[in-house]
Amino acid sequence: MNQFNELSASRRGFLGLVAGGLAIAATTPAKAARIKTKAKIVMIGAGAAGTALVNRLVDRLDGAEITILDPRVDHLYQPGLTLVAAGLKPAEYTQSKTTDWLPKGITHFPEAVAAVDPTAKTVSTASGQTLSYDFLILAPGLVLDHDAIEGFSLDLIGTNGIGALYAGPDAAARTWTAAQKFTEEGGVGIFTRPITEMKCAGAPLKHAFLIDDIAKRTAGPGKHDMHYAAHDHTLFGVPIVSEKVRMLFLDRGITPHYSHVLKAIEPGAKRATFATPAGDVEMPYDYLHVIPPQRAPDFVRESGLSWVDKWVGQDWAEVNMQTLRHLRFPEIFALGDVAGVPKGKTAASVKFQVPVVEDHLVAAIQGNEGTATYGGYTSCPMITRVGRAMLVEFDYNNNLVPSFPGIIAPLEELWISWLMKEVALKATYNAMLRGKA
Image (cartoon, rainbow, N blue to C red; front, side, top):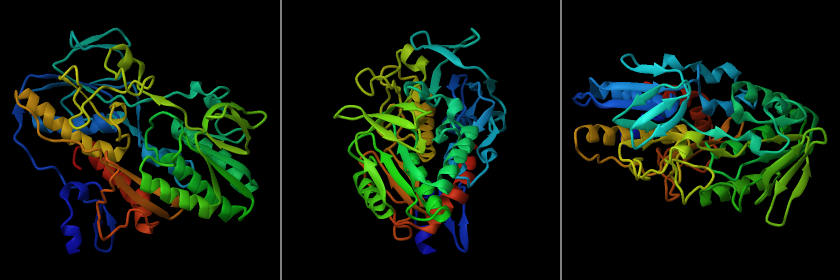
């Protein structure tokens, strides 16, 4: 218990241990003095990042005019999609109402953004409204570019052995329909990962591990031929984690195919085509899990807010990797999936990004400079089988940064890490949305 008490309060606020079991130490941030201001703040996106930040800003700012734009009726708990796609949770486990998480005292526009004019400091909505701002927060998430895969369409999910859990709760449930048939009947399973940056890069691996484990428990060993198509020469962006996954694949009989990027499918023939350095390669399948290329929403590029020399075609917002402040328009910040930083497209990353943006925004309102920095913290409870996971945490430099040194070994398959994913993470996520963790 003494070791636990010595852990940093910020990380205990994300995943906490208590004697006798697993729970959330939902540490409320220390109350800072409220700042009187008439600043106009526009937030684009009411996902994890936008909602968590707007709840904290309401507590910090007295008199600010805060507007949040997001057309989505439902709030999606995205970390739960891997559990839905493995038949471990129902689709509704991931769903709640967007408005349930938004604080009083703000204006919510349930509209999509059409454009940003960073010179005039205005945001145009899809219906033609124009909002002016003093500060703009970009947190719109990202676009799943399913159309980039020839022959694929969302209505195929759950049929012809095709799964695609990223497409939402219903798609994740239909993914399990296809995956369950595969686990029961056997055959060739192919699990893919796109060439672009992506949200939670561990998700493709989690799905492969879970379906492999369930298949061996269902039809038995030897009935399934498992393949993983990696987008480059590694299985994970952190070298030591990639090597651990390679060893687990070897032990489980999962064959990796490096530099294989899915480009087309033929659903009727159950055949997938991959782009490789040696040319296109066709592979037959009985089950195919599709994760599409991912990019920023169009308005980010069209408004001139994207990097022009990095992540070309993906269009992530051009921000300082430590402060998440736009490099050309200092009154604009970006966080969450849309931020153009080397790491950080997970809910755990958002938890560490939000206080940084809050710090610099509040300081800017006061005419000062913020001091907080984001070091690239990213966490991935890497599920390796039902009931076991590795709690992988790392930073921009690919250093492992375990929250519980001496208690939870980051590269060990542990039941406690599984419980953090399956039980504790959602409660912590909800506390984060409220601005309380």
